[in-house]
Image 1 (cartoon, helix red, strand yellow):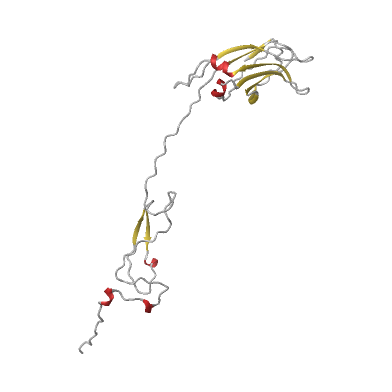
Image 2 (cartoon, rainbow, N blue to C red; image 1 turned 120 degrees about the vertical axis):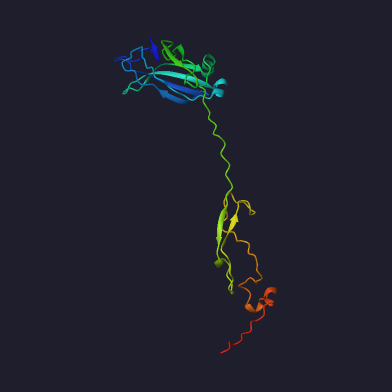
Length: 234
């Protein structure tokens, strides 16, 4: 929010001050966000800038996370210069203002004000004030997916599917193909081709490897008698 009575580190100009806020994990910077620069702030800069971090509560309770606030004098030509800093254990902040989930109305636990003395190369001079709160993250679990319904594919069967040397009449029909009917993994996919079951009607099935002399007549064919043709009377 603001700082008061901080050290003036500029010798010939008024200070332009910004705050660099970071989350330390095991003393290493994990996330860092800077506030806008408060121009001509002198020793009492104000920001009122909202900053948001994602914090692992388990790591914070284990004492592995630290809040770091550094006040910096913005100097474009000479380089930014540190004014002072503040370190606070995240575990301490959680204990002072525990996290609460958001309610249906959007309200949450109130902001808590903290004011702490700065430490830096110029000793302890000045204080920095900020407000904070922790919001419990809302985890939305997606509903279970609807199981896929069984499906049936109909494959048309044409007479051309059965080559033969004789004239065989085959009625076009459909063959029902259901998933899981065949052995082997299918991964939910229907086979592209499944040979339909052919019901024999007494005819010998043609095989390209056999000649016509090797074909044996079926029992039904052996019972057929040749027709005798008689001339019509004139």
